[in-house]
Image (cartoon, rainbow, N blue to C red):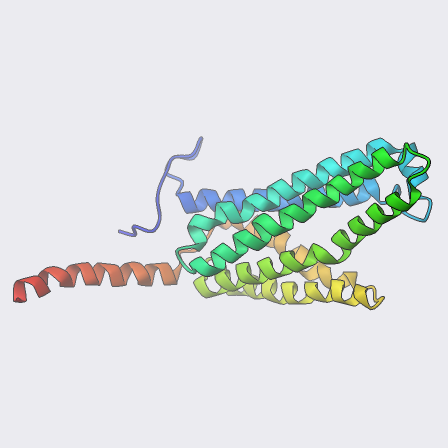
Amino acid sequence: MNTNRTTAAAPGKPGMSADRKAAVWIGVLYIIGTVALVLSALVTGSVLAGPAFLAQVAAQPNQLAIGALLVLLAGFALAMVPVVFWPVGKRSNEALAVGYVVFRGALETVLYVVGALCWLLLIALSAEPDVVPLAGFVRTVETVIWGQLLAIPFALGALMFYWLLYQSRLVPRWLSTWGLVGAALYIGSPLGSMFGLSLGVLMAPLAVQEMVMAVWLIAKGFSSSPMAAESAGETSRWQAAAPRAASAT
């Protein structure tokens, strides 16, 4: 009997294991977060483009407000992924699971919130005629957040997550390897932007991988972890050996 996998009934799916439910939720949360981010970029792209962005914000404040709400939705959904994964991941590598929670559950979420607040602040500033310098500063801050800062906790958290998955084999190794390579490439985009290079294409492999993994987790769930099974086997052998050792003495 594997004591590492708990079972709880899910509505409409009796007997679904806790790990299976976690996998489904992680897949759904990934999709919600990604779709919300894409929609936010589409909604706000034309409003924030060009040097006359403040006038455009004043003319279309609702678009920026909707974009901010979508970013907050994405931030919440993506922050919940490491929280839901924690009970599964800690059994294989607690240190990496903690790092994943810190980087993608906390630091990345804070940057999403700050970025959304910058957009909301621009709406308020667009109604004031004498705040162009301040509005320019806020615009610079949110540009740095989206273009450079956000990529750091995102990529580091992704590297921890996919290395944990690679070690534990909770998903096929081709999928976790794809994630590791994608996360490494992802870091190149913000680094390139610091030197005036447009390397946004380097983000594509990880973006595609996350959607593939989301669908995989919803459809297949996590594989039984060999590391967890080995740990359980060692515990069982120790428990079995303890009475014999006691009787021998």
